[in-house]
Length: 417
Ligand code: EPZ
Figure 1 (cartoon, helix red, strand yellow):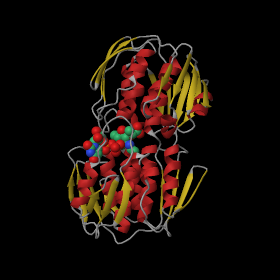
Figure 2 (tube, rainbow, N blue to C red):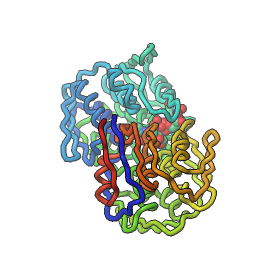
Figure 3 (cartoon, rainbow, N blue to C red):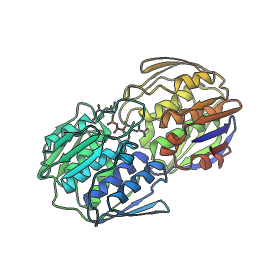
């Protein structure tokens, strides 16, 4: 069991460099199954989700090296067996192996994908799309057995622009017979990153990043290479922390347009923000104004920044309204914030946050990845010592979070007990 012990209220000064995006790399790695060629993926964050996926790839017979943020993957001897429960249930992104194993080997066996406690997180869009493309899918008591003679290109319409389903259908369609058109596709930047990787292998994809993506099936693929885009959620989390504690605080290696929604809201709250290329400087203002946050799909305010942002709102003088619209259960951190002295009333997926409240260090726990981020922000601004338990969640999505923050003046200890 790992925990973080944080001494709060320390001025932060200096630079935090942003790592590669978790939600991109967790798709890029399974996507390599589509080719027998060699793949190089650069700017890979060393986080537990990546380590888990490397183990899954090796279980399939892939030869993987990972050093200096560079992954090399050779799938020439992959022997697609089933993806074992040991891994698949621990990481939601394991569902991307469905698209790539079916697309390349026409067979996939895996247990139900994992996830965290933020919602039911069904994968019906994925399953129904694969069936429309010709797959036969048998649901067993512990997972799926999936077979297809070869995917057929077809029009796929999503009731909701699902990130995972958009990526999974794109992966599945690359080697399909004919053309696949995804309508009402998700537009998150990670999707374009995955498309660029597939195109580097020889895939024919247009429209990634827009609401309509067209994939023209090809016979086979060759070597691939890609640079993972910066993690916009990591960047946003550090900008929120810098807005509360930064005196001369910079976040570097950011793509500003990926977090325009957050920057706009921080400015509305009175934070001074200076964007200079891929470096963003924030300084905490004397007073913060209340702002209303409603999470939605890209380019709207990202659901993954909702929880850390709700901690920020406890420091705004007045009443802020926070509304989560993507997941049904993403307010589990609120009781922990109130336990630290916040004044938040939550109803279903909406919270009314009154500030400014002085938070006091407490023993709290991370209920999921971004709830952990919310507790981290709270511990950084609270009086005294905050201990966050279950921080394995946090280490899934934030590379070297302790050293990155201690290097700019924080006082955080990671204790393995
Ligand atoms: C991705 O999850 C991210 N995870 C999530 O980040 C992120 O919050 C989410 O996209 C939205 O941006 C990864 O990329 C690994 P969705 P995903 O499919 O693909 C419903 C984090 O903290 N839905 O866009 O699962 C679903 O229940 C994580 O880094 C269906 O109903 O998100 C949810 O309410 C958390 N049926 C909504 O759509 C489906 O088949 C959004 O899901 C698929 C999704």
